[in-house]
Image 1: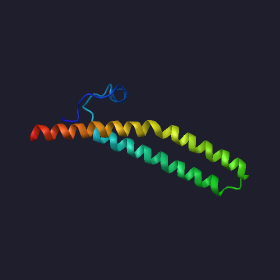
Image 2 (image 1 turned 90 degrees about the vertical axis):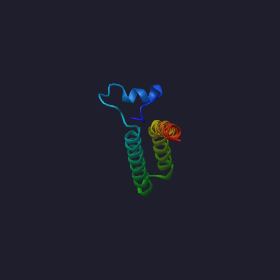
Image 3 (image 1 turned 180 degrees about the horizontal axis):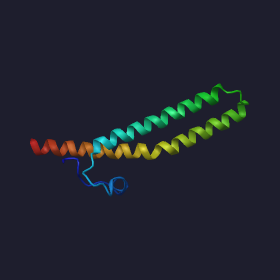
Image 4 (image 1 turned 60 degrees about the horizontal axis):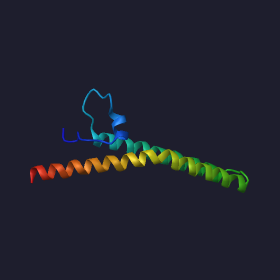
Length: 100
């Protein structure tokens, strides 16, 4: 399969032990869905806090905490997506060079 190529140690940890060839495109889609779910959950939490009757100073602290937590939770997925996209574009470039 053309998607099988050298991967970084972080990505390799995700696929080690797989009994069949992995599919970078499927992993990218799955990771993107996970990131979308995190973003949706975060937006829901933010709206709930903003609509709440909490004191403004406390509300600001809660929002700051939610924003920090959201950045921390999504950062590994954003990094993984960037890496997967890089590997997929390398595979496409390799396929184009092999056929051209």
